[in-house]
Length: 190
Image 1 (cartoon, one colour):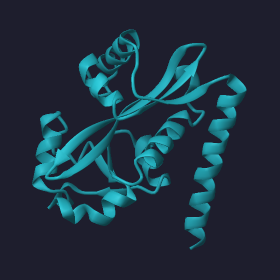
Image 2 (cartoon, one colour):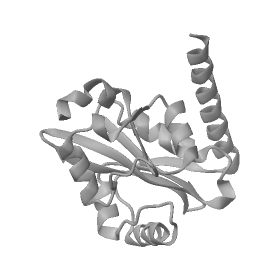
Image 3 (cartoon, rainbow, N blue to C red):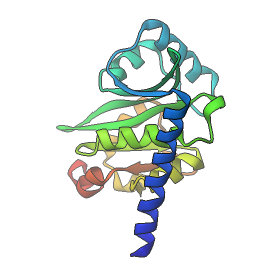
Image 4 (spheres, rainbow, N blue to C red):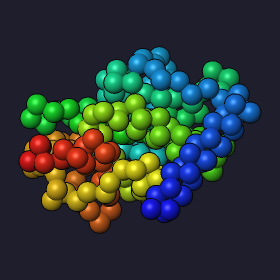
């Protein structure tokens, strides 16, 4: 039991440190539902240039922003962002956290964790999934209380929906995490 309390204390401390860093550096974290075309074009180009990001077009980003996205802004420049992509499986909506990015100048300040935490909290009462290759993102998912699931625990329909977007059945390179709401009702999608 002490281990769980230590993890909760650690995550709270890391998020508080990230928030304090933002305040000190004049970085705003905002929940937005619309971004300018120029901002969307920059984000789209980032996704094309970075092998760790899944490519997203401006049109896809517009649609994702409608679900709500968190951005980090400093001096009117977006220095970090996270979106969600909406999937429909049967009568359920599943939201996939996506396009997490933080400017290299501000990495190692837990700003990625801060963005993930805000998005995870925002979608806490619905089905949220994270699909990632990066060990740091896996660690953050675990710190945020998300549960690692294998593809065999997901419905065929959910896996097929993810495959449409290029998220192949690849448990060697990707790990799949779901929030508590999704974990408790994952059987509904079978």
